[in-house]
Amino acid sequence: MPLLIPDGKMTAVGRGNRHSMPGITTNRTHDGPSHNTPDGGRFWTDEDRQAVGKLVENIRRVEQHAFETGDRPLIADAHSLLSGLVQLYDLLTAFRNSPDGRIKGPQGVAKKLGLTRNGVYCRLEMVGLDPEDLRNPPGDVRDLVARSRIFGPLADRLQNIAGSI
Image (cartoon, rainbow, N blue to C red; front, side):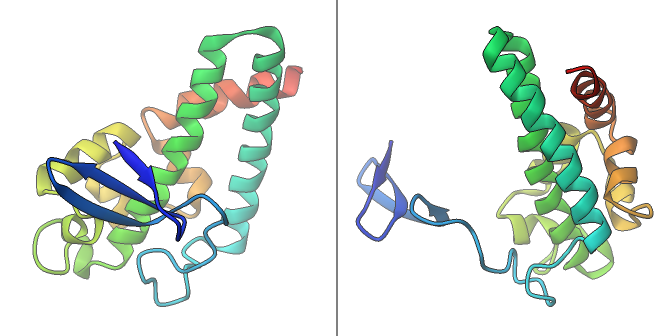
């Protein structure tokens, strides 16, 4: 069960173990580099950030509409896509910072994400992509979202709904 401690970090307490989860805070936004990227956390290009920003803006509009109309499935879809974009960012960063996009090994994606090899494959399945999609990503993040078996159709659907609101 998570417990908020005074420094703003969440701590998992259970079976006598205390594990600090740095990076989960409650009193500020995340403003530091993610996964020690060499460019200070700037993995996506400005164009990617603009594209993702536009997508997030549309998702938030759809989410607000869904709250106002009580459309629970639509709320869930919006939350799924937003959560998925975070997962995608973490995967992209880890693949970028791993030699040749390796999943195993001391510098591999699994180690960087704190997962097992199978955990990385499960995460890839969750975002609807294959390892090769992240080893050699397409032109920009919009193409990667569109390539996703899960995010592509969901993003298209939510964008269409945002256009009709």
